[in-house]
Structures are given as structure tokens and as C-alpha cells.
Amino acid sequence: MRQDLLPWALEGLDLGANPLEIGPGPGLTTEVLRTRCTQLTCLEIDPDLAAALKARLGSQNVTVQHGDATAMPFPDNAFSGAASFTMLHHVPSPQLQDKLLQEACRVIRPGAWLVGSDSRTSLLFRLLHLGDTMVVSDPNAFPNRLRAAGFEEVAISLSPGSFAFRARKPAA
Image 1 (tube, one colour):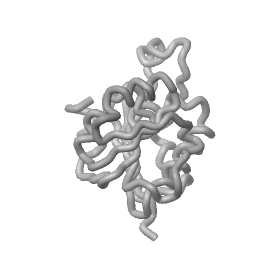
Image 2: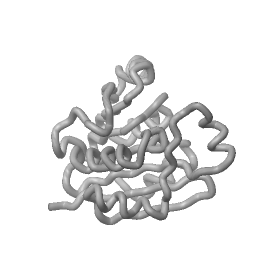
Image 3: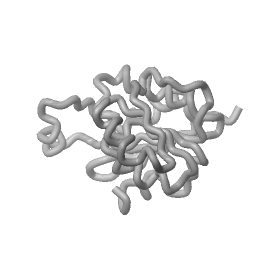
Image 4: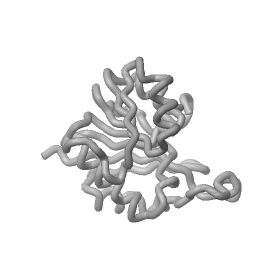
């Protein structure tokens, strides 16, 4: 995570002083992201994961909120950037994934970046998600989905098991 995924997705980008992390889960990426900003806000749908992350990092520069990323409880333009790492496949439909992308665009400031990654399908990945939500996004179609959500300057990077993405909210 620290040596491969995050440097790959964040290379050359600054998420600003107060970014949003969408779906941090247990907080593996949170540990790294919090060192790159003044204040990090995390939005986690799982109440147990949100509580555990808040207990572990809540005294640091991290605010953890339990909530649904398809209906974010934040005002427009509230954050200096946003990140979402290896969690989109847990969102139960492409339509809800698109709603999450729209919400991310709404809550970040004009000119800010959304960065992230997600897994690509494989037999091992499917086996690891037996009995779990797994709606894998096609990285070839993902740029159009980001544009439809309101982003520009969309870029995708592929690796054998995952893809990283970055997209910018229009400046004006």
C-alpha cells in the first residue's frame, strides 16, 4: 500500500490541506494520507469500521464520520481534494458507484482532484469476495463515467490487478 499503490495514484498531485477519504475501511491508506495534509476527513459506511478508525486515529489530524458516500453529509465545495482507494467494488451497483463519483465532485472545490484506485477482476479476486459485494468497474469505461460525474482531466493507469484514476473538478 505505502510503497506501490499510493505513490502510483498520488504521483505529482497535492490533495490540499483538508481532503476527504471516501471509504477508508480499516484505515490502511488513511495512515499515509494523513501525513500529506493538515486535516483529513474520512467517510465510512460500515459503523464498526468507522468506530474503530475513529478510536485509532481520532486524536490525530483525522475526523471520521459514519455515512453513505452516495449521499454525502457535506456541503458543496467543502474539501480540497478527495481519495478513494480499493473500495468502489464494494458499492453494490454501477449506478450507485456513479452517484458516489457525482457526490465526490460536488463536495470538492473547483480545481481539486479526485484520486483513487480499484481492483480488476481475476479468479483470485472473485474467490476473496465470495459472499461479499463485488461490482468491478471496467477501467476502459471508467474515464467516461468520471466525465459524466462532472470531472475533466481524467487519467487511468493500469496494472495487472488494479487500476488507478485521477480526475479534476473544473476550475470554474
